[in-house]
Every structure is written in structure tokens, then in C-alpha cells.
Amino acid sequence: MSEFLGFAWELLAKVVYNVVAVVSSILNLLVFGWVEYFNIFMTYFTTFDLVGKIGAVILFAMLIAVPVLIVAILVYRYRINRRLHRDDTSNKALYREIGRLNKQVLDLMDEKNKLLALKVNAMGGTKQIPYVGASALADDHLPTVGNVVGAAAGAGAPAGEGAPATAVMSGNASLALDGAGVKDAAAAMAKATVEAKTLAEEKEIAQANRFPKLSLVDLKYRDWETPVYDDAISLEDFVDSFRAFACSQMKLYYTPEIIRRFVAGMAASKLLILEGISGTGKTSLPYSFSRYLDNPATIVSVQPSFRDRTEVLGYFNEFSKRFNETEFLRAVYEAGLRQDPSMIVLDEMNLARVEYYFAEILSVLEMPSHDEWVLDLVPTQWAADPKGLHDGKLTIPDSLWFIGTANNDDSTFTITDKVYDRAIPIELNERADAFECEPHERVHVTADHLQYLFQKAKVEYVIDDELLQKMHKLDQYLQTRFKLAFGNRIIKQMYDFIPVYVACGGTELGGMDYIIARKVLKKFESMNVSFVRDEMKGLIEYIEKTFGEGGLPDSVMYLQRIQNFY
Image (cartoon, rainbow, N blue to C red):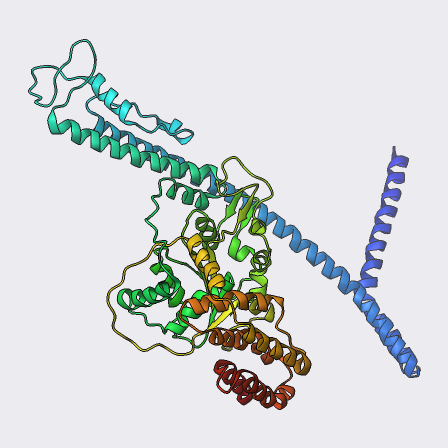
């Protein structure tokens, strides 16, 4: 036995010795050996040339980096383990808190159903309607006129107790009420039933629909009564009556020229940009115009954080299985359920880059067929989706216009040519003088009738051939001297804008002057400064020679302003 103990002692001692030797070697390698390393480094360092010294420094730095890296890895792993442990503890506490809150929600819903049962019992008579209790959390059984009256009738009332409004009827369990009591009770029950039905529908929409806001719009227009539309109004009367309405009803004043440009801009594009200095009525113009049409515009305040389409259209939340709807999306959807013109105002639209968050809508509006004005919201259709969505897609209605307001200061982005080409810009740089007028009420006109007036103007006020020839000469001059062309889109907008502008009380030359200044000459602002300054005088002289002196006053004034600016 003693020999075995000796063997075990010697073997284990050798193992412990080797383990201690290994640990000692590691400590000498990483910790205690640095004194010897440094002595060796200093001994040889003084004998090296420049290249040798650099190599020695690099080698010694690499040796230092090894233990530092090991220590960093150990510390990182330690922190990760502690964080995982802490997160696990926090998650357990969070789960307990969620369970407690869920229990409170169930208790509150149970209490709500008790109150609802008490309210219905108080309306229904002496027989108590049984409380449905916790089952109401899964399926609400709301009272109707029939079951409330039936419950009250089943309760009955014993004869001779002096109840003047009741009488026991033999052969059935009905309860008879006399005179006004029957009417009052029936009216109260009917009203309660309608309110309960509406609340039930809204609750069902909120719980079972991934588009609750759009479905509430469907509910709003389910029993919508359309007004009587005035299909006899002309464009000139339309302009004059709006100016009188804004003055008499809203104390807002606009010149006839601004209103003509606004209405003609609606004929030329679905996107209008109102720009100018602050306080000139950029937001109030579309707002008052929509009030005049008895269809108030939706005001969307653009934020500097807007980056993509989700900022205006919303997005589908995969976690909650609901679509995060925006007011912009609701307004687009609601416009499709109305016959009158609708407007969405993008207030301060250039606080963010328009070509980022509005890019998809700009592209859709360029499609030649209205059937292609479609926005993809979700990939598939669900049974409970709003009726205006088809295969998860929403069509932009032809009765909708987008109105953007823009300030030009240091806090905003420059609106690019891509956006300007697709829009009709309208400058508001001064306030109109106040005036007196007779009171004027709103008008009701369909978007189809407004489009008919636009098409009618194009037939009745065809642009004069001589004026078109002068326009083409100016186009050739701009292409030759400035490499600047009108473009097909601008030509189309000009053919849409000028006839409506004339029908609203303007002149052909005035309409062409405005389009040339705001759509063509505006491109000079992005061209070479010195080149523009040198050639501007010759362009002004050519315009006055072609169109006559004072023929295009807005264009000449715009060029002079650019010239003075440079």
C-alpha cells in the first residue's frame, strides 16, 4: 500500500509541477518577462542603424499588441456575458409586467361590459338582461330594439300596483305602453341601437382591419348624400365668385391674376407649387379655394426627416399586421369617394427633398393613362380591406390635386428641375389690397364638370398660329444660344394652360408670358453665372423684337431680376 501512495504522490506532484510551470511560463511570457524583453531591446537598439531601429520598434510594438489584444478580448467577453445576463433578467421582469398589464386590461373590459349591461337593463324594464361577463371579451352581444322590448315584455307587471303606463295582456308576455310613453321609449331604444351598432362597427374595424383609418372613411361615406351640383357655371364666373367668397367669408384678398394662374395651373398639371416670401398667402390660397368648393383641403406639414414614400403613404407593420396609415393616404383614398375636386396641401414641401419622398407619386402622375395612376400599398388583398383598394393597390383619383408651398431661405432645399418640369409654379411675392364685395356662398361643382370646362376652353380658345410661330422662334433662339429647349412636357402644359387662362379672363400673350418666364427662363438660375450675365441683354432685346416692346413683360422682368442678381 505504501508503494502505491508513493507512486500516486510522485505522479500527481509531477502533474502539478508541470501545470505550475505552464502558468509560470505564461505569466513570464505576458507579464513578468517584459523587463527582460526591454533589456534585450535596449542592448541591441543602440547598435542598429536607422533601418534596424525601425524594425526593432515595429517588432517590439507587435509583441506589446499581443497581450493587449488578449486582455481586450477577455474584457469584451466578460461585458457581453454580463449584458446577456442583465438582459435576461430585464426580459423576465418585462414579461411579468406585460402579464400584469394584460390582466388589468381584461379587468377593465369586464367592468365596461358590466356597465353596458346595467345601462341596457335600465332602458329595458324590470326584467334583467343577463350579464355576459368575460365572454364579451371574445364576442360582444350588443342589444337591439327587439331583444330589449322582448325582455321588458317578458318581465310583465302585476295588475293593481298603480302603474298607469302598463297593462297586463292575457295570452302573451307583451308589455303595452300608452301614448307618448311608447314613442319616447321606442325613440330612445332606436337611438341607442344605432349608436351601439356604429360603435360595434368601429370596434370591429379597429380590431380586424389592417387599414382602420381607410375603413372608417368607407363607413363615413356609406350613407353620404351628395349635394346639388352647379353644372352651369363658367370659368370666368368661377374665378370671380371665388374671389368674392374669399373676401366676404374668409377676409382673404387675391388679385384676379393670381386666381387665373391658379385655375389654369390646375388644368395643366396635378401638382402646383406656390412659392414666394412668407406671409403672402401661399397656404391660405388652396385652403380657401377648397372651402369655396365645400371640400376642405388636407394640410400635410412636411418634416425635414422625410426621406422616402413611407413618410407620406405609410407602411405595413409586419409585427402588428397593420398598415401605418398617414393623413396623406387617408386624403388620397377619400378623394376617390367624392365627386368634387379635392386638394392635398404639402406645407413647406422643400423642408425635405421633394424628389425623395414624392418621387413615386411624381412618376405615377406622368403615366399617360389614368388607369396607370396606381400606388402599390401591400402585395395581396385581404377580405377585410377597404373597398377602394384592389389587390392591395390604390388608384390616385383624377379629381385630386397636390398643392405644395415653398419658401426660399437657408432652411430649405432647392426644388430641382425634375419637380419644376412636372409642376406649375406660381409666385406670390406680394399681398393683394383689401376690397369690399357682396357676400358670396360656396359652390358645388363636380371634378368632371371642371375638367369639361378645361376641355371646352381648349376648343373655344385655340392658341393663335402667329403667336405659336413667335414661340417657336424663341425656342430656336434659346436652343442656339443657350442649349435650352422648351421640351415636350412644357409644350403640352402650355397648350393646356393658355386656353384656360384666357377663359378665366386673361389674354393669350399673358398666359404664354407666364409659362415662358416660370417654366423656361427659370432654368437660367442653374446655368453658368458669367455666361448668363453676358448673354442676358441680347436675349431681352430678341424677346422685345419678336413679341413687341412690352409684349412679354413678366419674362423681361424675370430676366432683369436674374441679371441684377448675378
